[in-house]
Image (cartoon, rainbow, N blue to C red; front, top):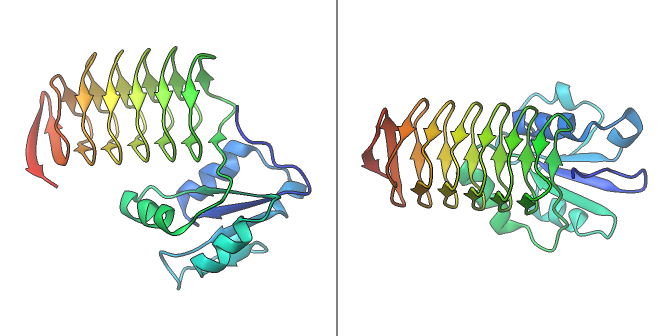
Amino acid sequence: MSFKLKLNEQLIIFGTGSQASYVIDNLNLNEESKKNLSFVNLENKSMDFQHLSGFKIFNDIKVANSYAQKKSSYSIVAHGNLSLKLDILRQIEKVNFINAIHENTSISKSVSIGCGNIINSGAIILPNVVIGSHCIIHSGCVIEHDCQINDSSNIAPGVVLAGGVIIGKNTYIYTGAKIGPKITIGDNCIIGAGSLVLNDIPSGVKAFGSPAKIVEKI
């Protein structure tokens, strides 16, 4: 289900931090394939790139976008920072996005997955789940049957979504949170670490606690 990079193909990773490292790990690239990797650094122009020594690094998103539009090029946006990820997605176009899914995941054959997603080791995704595009699902997550995770949402390590949960766009569910069955969480929300969500959460708010309560608008 994950992307396999061929020797004559290029992969451009928009990001240079931990999420970019997850992409490399998830794709299980060999040394030959790594020669066809490029990175786009937009968040920290003074960053020490020792961990990316030998790779091509773009600092101009327009140049990177042009490079990514080539027929044999593929791309993925690797950022945990939602606002930065959305800003990058607004600036790039006409590129082929791929999924970076670790081989050590358990994903039902009936799961529907969009493009540009990062799904890390140990994630369990059960039947009839629908995942949009540009989401991050971290290690140890359990996504029960019939859930829906919409575009550009981040599901942090150890999160459990019970059956029939709906997660809106651009929403961040922090580490260890548990979402009860058939709960809907709106767009642009933040659910705090360790929270237990037993009631629907409207769009544009931050909620945390056990049970979770809305603490402020975003």
